[in-house]
Amino acid sequence: MSAGLAASGKQALSRPAHRSAGRLAIFIRRLRRNGAGLAGGIVVLLVFAAALCAPAISPYPPNALDFAAYLSAPAFAHPFGTDEQGRDVLSRVIFGGQVSLRVGFIAVSIAMAAGVALGLIAGYYEGWTGTFIMRWMDVMLAFPSILLALAIVAVLGSGITPLMVAVGIASIPQFTRVAQSSVLSTKEADYVQAARVVGCAPVQILIRHILPNIFAPITVLATTGVAAAIITGAALSFLGLGAQPPTPEWGSMLSNGRVYMEKAPWMMVFPGLAIMVTVMSINLFGDGLRDALDPRLK
Amino acid sequence: MGAYILRRLLATLPILLGVSVLVFGILHAVPGDLVRLIAVRESAAITPEQEARIRHQLGLDRPLAVQYAGFVGRAAVGDLGRSFYTNRPVTTSVLEQYPATLELAGAALLFAVVVGGGLGLMAAVRHNTWIDNAAMIFSLGGLSIPIFWSGLLLIYLFAVRLRWVPIVGGLGWKALVLPAVALGYDAAAFIARMVRSSVLEVLRREYVLIAHAKGLSERTVIFRHVLKAAMIPIITLIGLHAGRLLGGTVVVETVFARQGIGRLAVDAVLYKDYFLVQGVVMLAALTYVLLNLVIDVSYAWFDPRIHYQ
Image (spheres, rainbow over the protein chains, first blue to last red):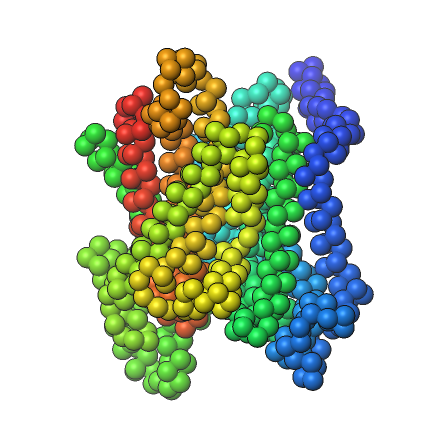
């Protein structure tokens, strides 16, 4: 009898508490009301689309050399000018988006997966395990994040993959902290207690009942995290520790443009502009997302 | 107060211990064998006997726990080994470059507090006017422009075009202005936003209305009552940003070709000079931890309600 009750209780608890379709409609309505957030979202989508369709829309291949047209100022044939090897800056900026966005998204995916898992564990098992995890996060936060990423690059070597891993690892503590504090405030809720009473395993409680409720703050953090990761990734490439030539990447293009600043300022203007527009749009979209997902977080 | 500072100092010990484990780990996480790496760099073929000797010299033939204890013991007396390249003590190299970095970070912080704080205050006092809008546009720029790009733009405008300051290098305040502005812009943007919202919130409180009602001048109300109360969140932010400024020097020192531990760190990573990497990372973490301690203690000065519990 009691086993039957427990089974039906589990079944009832495994159903989503709210109708997701209704929540999605409210979310979209709120987001549409936020002009800046919406504009940010549209620009982010455009940057994404440009990066995805780079081979189709860029006027030249990114590494096509044309020594006859080296350091040409912006003109009809080359709207963003050319670099010291005659490569088209516009095409390189478009292709560069592929690398920078990939670094941003993969680094944040690494940080989110590891950070949320650690945060869930630290929040749910408050004792020794939780303290141990959170103290380690404090230690990681004792390093300025770019320096931590730099130290990890020192170990892994330069290149795009080590760059993504380094930026990802350096961003773990923020996700762990947010996830842990969200778990702490959620785990005493009635529905979590009820799940525990009917005998749900801790893993099931964490994944099915607690994780959906920390979705809002984590999504907001992930969005702004992508912007921060793009900047850190570009900074490390600028320093010569990330993407290596001839890969088109915004940070390394800026580093190259620095050398030709007097003769060809366009080489450093356009890649920088691309980073700024992308980062600003992601941040505006992140703000809009925060307000739409949970107005209390405002 | 003394007891509080002591307690707070003791609380940083586990963090410092963790930092030492991470820094020690850098050397041991390097893929491949350190001795082989040194040999490859020197492009010298070494005999097994020489390899064993170097391994023994570096203490790499001992158990990991013993190596760690040795590392902490030596670090405690300021011995972080010698640079693979220059063979100079790491501590000497790092401490030589440290003042230049502190000078840059300090100037950037000063710029951020004066410009960011001033703009934020003006934006709040002249809420919803063009001053407010201009301050917020300034702040949006600071939040989105990467340091290395703002640095390059400043060099292009003020050094290449206007020729007001030297392009790179140079001495004195002229050489410090552009790097400090580039480094401090994003902190100034954050501080402007925070000062604006803190002051706006305090301006609505009753005691401010009473101060106005008593006939105090606006200047007195703002400086004596509003600013002091709005200071706590601002100090927290300054503390957070002081650490970020330290990290930012890594980029700014390279952009402006300045000396400092940031540039030393980049060079050390590029040349795989692992002891030097350890030294810089250790010093940066130490500075950051101490800075947070100072910030915590300074809260009470601004808010007498905090009683060092």
